Length: 247
Image (cartoon, rainbow, N blue to C red; front, side, top):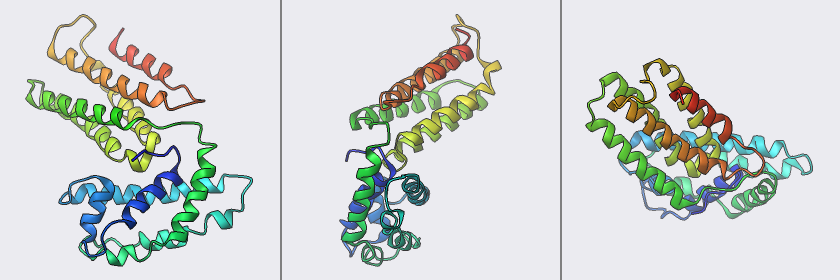
């Protein structure tokens, strides 16, 4: 599923997948399909539901910022959507959720998505690029776990990579903005530990992992930057990375 470049489009597509789930399934299984997570992962399911609720709020705010539309008409679908998301029982029958998603609600979201797509100023990251970044992340995590790095350093890398992993998992909900937020947070977090980075030319394992981490961040940053038709964020971020590494 192509991830839309605006919150209304992402919300519509997720709710459309939700509407297509069999009514006799438990809500847990339906949401697992919608979000692409393991049906038994309670933490991931609840976090993704929280992200979805946040997407509803983001979509409403985006619509309210549009100047040349009737906001009452464009916001009409949200009464049902908010009622739909007011339930949190993952063990209930999906029918209790599904019955609240009707065609007029989803149709109304399509109008908002079309309008917002014209003013978003960005495109989307190709699905194969997201898959490639996920694969690289998992390989990196495995390398860290198998390394001889001090436990504190391992924890630092893994904490930041886990946050990026969730942003990738939640990409279909949070979009490019979610990845941008995590990139900025990860860089900010590691800046606090820049004194622990061995100097340039050091051949230690620690220096190698620092460079590998920032190479990985650079890859994501380039993918994000390509989605922007107006904003250019790669330059300042990579300057910061080079400064942190002492290059």
